[in-house]
Image (cartoon, rainbow, N blue to C red; front, side, top):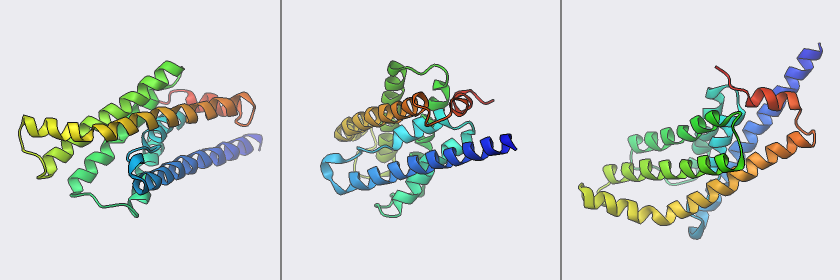
Length: 195
């Protein structure tokens, strides 16, 4: 009976973390879309990175960025094609993989490095896709370089937000464990690699 209570509490905590990450991502995406100076300043990459780190089940972790994208995209502009949308969604699986590989090796420098990598990879993948799928840029090296150059202002905001929200999420998690809000057993099993 005691094991059932512990499992039920762990499940409730994990559902709360899942919902909180999705809500944070959705809200920040909607705010980012509303204010031009905040374009791409969202918690999406950080939520995906933390989900990969926190959730034992990789599919559950991958559902975090997918759910927040699907929900927020109901209110945001549509993609130019299904292929473009699929690549953007797939690019959000990379931070989940990075978060999973961070388990047991986390420190401030690694978290910052992984958050920065999340931004850089997303920038390169999505700007290449935008260049390939749209007729705004010439389909040559100069056009590709122009596409990346036009995306630099968005990259700045993305790097800043991925770093900020990653440190906030990982910091809040460490604090919750430290003060006993999150049971140490849950923290240990959530952080432990699951193969």
